[in-house]
Image 1 (cartoon, one colour):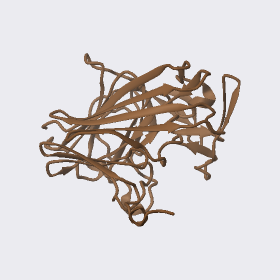
Image 2 (cartoon, rainbow, N blue to C red):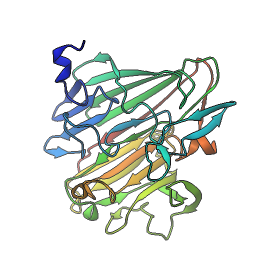
Image 3 (cartoon, one colour):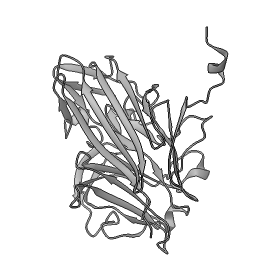
Length: 312
């Protein structure tokens, strides 16, 4: 029998709040989801309320694969994976298996919280995967460190991504966007990759910051430029440069999905924010084999990304 208090807990589970100065972040028990981030008076995320589920992937952790998987089927190491089709209109499985699972609290401090989750073997992923996340606030913003360990006796595939919706408080059309990517993946009518092309000279070239305007993006970018500190930086800013948000990712994240929210429901939420999604592999990677991480038995992987709110 459930305890009475659990019947009335927030829909997204326990709320883990961390603070540093004027920065406040909330991470939820369900999915270890990044629900909210405010930096002073600026709401950095277009998030969701604690008494509603995440919609359209808002703030979610995408593992053991990010983005879409054709028909939910793949083969790895002689084993077949069969995932539920949770994007039925396109016939895809999408965004992995852990975004609706409870994540257990590992440690908590004023400025940091660490959560962990065990993904047990199942038809969609017949390996045991141990996942950990640390969200930490500091003077330069939010850092997220992800870790994964293969706790099974066979080599396991891994891909991971994150799905924050970023905003500087203005409509997407007016946002000045910089994406440090030289290539993009072309897709079919099911949003699955079919090729790759240079962005130079096309509407997808944001290597030099410019207003988004009427451009519609649900695009996976590749060829990311990493700076001397090993980080790529994608930047949103207001026209006057007074409001700036950056998403950075280390070299473990070689792909970036960017989505301007043109198909969101309800329609009132469309083009209010830009989803900037660091990913270790492209869409459909478990089926194509492209840049899938091979985790040997007992081996671990880690990568880091974050959100900075520099002064304009």
